[in-house]
Image (cartoon, rainbow, N blue to C red):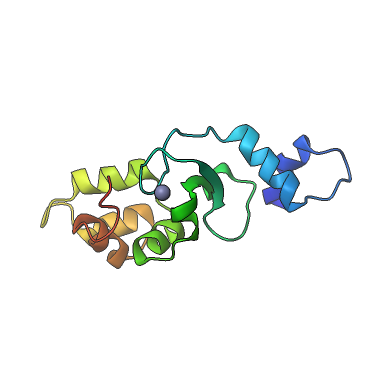
Amino acid sequence: MRKLKKLNKFLLKGQEVSYDTLHKYIKQNLEKPIYCQFCRQVKKLDLANKSGNYLEDLSDWLYLCRKCHVRQDNRLIIYLNTKLTLAQVAFIRKEYKPRIISQRKLAKMFNVSKTAISDIVNNRTWNYL
Ligand SMILES: [Zn+2]
C-alpha cells in the first residue's frame, strides 16, 4: 500500500499498523494548534480524522475540540469532506470575482464541486474564517 509507505519508516519492519500507532505517528508529526481548527476556540483538543480512511497523510487529520469532534452539523461535514485546506478556502474567498473568475473555474482549479465553491463564497460554510 502506497499510502502506508512513509508510515512504515516509522514502524518496525513487519509491525502491523494499528489505530494507536497511526495516532501516535500523526501526533508526532502534525503540529498541534492552540485553538480548535473548526471553531477556533482555545480548548482541549483531540486529533480527528477527516476522511474516515485514517490515512497516514497529515492533511487527513486535524485538531478539534471535543464539542466539534462529536458535532455533526452541515458546516462541519462539508469541512471534513472537502479536500480544501484553510489557506485554499481563504484564496477562493479572495479571488472569486463574478464574471471574471467564476465559481466553475475555481471548482475546476481545486477539483471540488461548484456547490462547494458556492457555499464558500456565499459564506454558507467556513464562516469562522
Ligand atoms: Zn471546536
